[in-house]
Amino acid sequence: MFYSKEDLAHLEKRERINLLNSITGIKPVNLIGTVSAEGNTNLAIFSSVVHLGANPALIGFILRPPQEVARHTYENILATSVFTINHVHRDFIENAHYTSAKFPVEVSEFDTCGLTAEYHEGFVAPYVKESELKLGLIYRESIPIPLNNTVLVIGEVQNAIIPDRVREAEGHLDLSKVDDVGLSGLHSYYALEKIAQLPYARPQELPPF
Amino acid sequence: MFYSKEDLAHLEKRERINLLNSITGIKPVNLIGTVSAEGNTNLAIFSSVVHLGANPALIGFILRPPQEVARHTYENILATSVFTINHVHRDFIENAHYTSAKFPVEVSEFDTCGLTAEYHEGFVAPYVKESELKLGLIYRESIPIPLNNTVLVIGEVQNAIIPDRVREAEGHLDLSKVDDVGLSGLHSYYALEKIAQLPYARPQELPPF
Image (cartoon, rainbow over the protein chains, first blue to last red):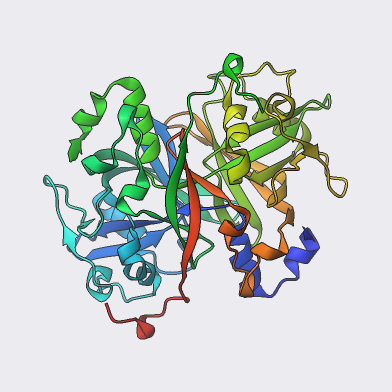
């Protein structure tokens, strides 16, 4: 079905939000772990983590308008300059999903959502023990997006924990080996199955189409 | 295995690029369709498309440093102010993947990669006929990311083509109904299977963990 701009504008509000959150395709599901200056841990689910570059190793995520609601994750990152990104696997989708509930600032989602904080190599931000593939990042920059008051928050990778069984030749990963999941919209979770690994594409080496 | 920043820096170059492109988790796979002021069509695969907001309906994607190599997609967007985002399905992964090969500017990836340009409702940018779920966008803004000279390119959704069989109640989609695929790194493709749809998360409605 073809939806014009007017058709999309006239959808019921929740339907419109769900639809527009879904139409970019599958999204990664990550838990971002932080700690406040006072030592309170925080954990929040994000589906907007995006690779920005390999050298330096930069990763960004989109933050909803900071003035709209409390943004404990962002406040903690600004206070302590570190955060972790933890992949979500099939066996703790529900735990991860419920970190999106609006808990008071003094409450840690690790406690309310049945997940376990763990620490590596002196890094002060908490990792998620249940996650097998996870990264520690140092905060680098916030880039405002004035069109809708969101913010692109950028970190640089400081360390990575990657199980050997996920690693394949030449740095490729098979995310299905740790039952990584994906998301569409804000509510629909997907299992992943690796089905193809294609070579670097050169014009003179096209397969027959 | 734990990788420190130094461990990551000392990986062989291609291994490092593949690994760092893979560690954010599953990524969407989209073909961006554009047309030059002269009427030449262009099609390119992107894995960095990200939802920015529903009202207005904004979508962004990350462009590699424009000064590094020819960026036909970006030049066309700046020239004509429109582009399309087309989901990639399992039956044309290879065609989509090979749009990343560096073809000369006068060559259309629609022709070299066996895909078909189609047009809707007077929108001048080409859609991909083989894609069942696709969007038309008007260019809104480019936001430079000085840390690594990439650019966040932002468009506003003008229209959407979504098959009825993908639509579920309340605007949710099941992307596996059109065999949408995901990507990790630059080479590894995944099939998707919808396994859960969870409710809006409220602190007072936590399931037992």
